[in-house]
Picture 1 (cartoon, helix red, strand yellow):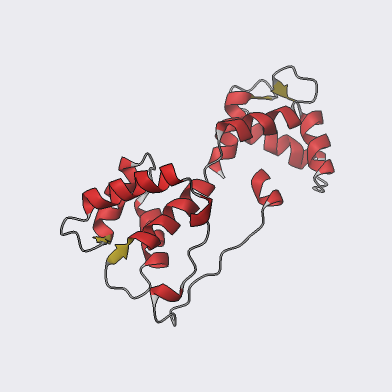
Picture 2 (cartoon, rainbow, N blue to C red):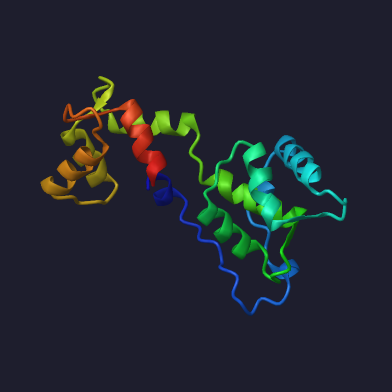
Length: 176
């Protein structure tokens, strides 16, 4: 929820009327490094058994897991529905690249989480108090009631000490 405030860039949803996959944009693939693209190509090729440049939707989960992603069945189905516009049951490499770029964009890096935690932990004691949370949320334009702030703390506060430590913060951020 923190990143969304900075980069609200919604992707156009392909409609059922989209006749060809080729007309879909390949957003975010240009934000991948050459190294990442090479890694994805290698994984893709391993599962492209007949070398025709496509993998079946069934193989998608296996490919993504081999790259350290862990999509649920429902997420896989959503991804497949988004990418496989012609419904032929196969995914080509540009479609796969777009998918991986999107999936990786959703994964906060540890550095980003540490930076975000420091923003909230104003006194630097390693914990986010209700007062600190309220202050930052107010500055982000989210005017929260005391009850809402307390509820956020309660939801994230696994050990029940009334404040959020780094580990709890990471869990909260990854749960979005």
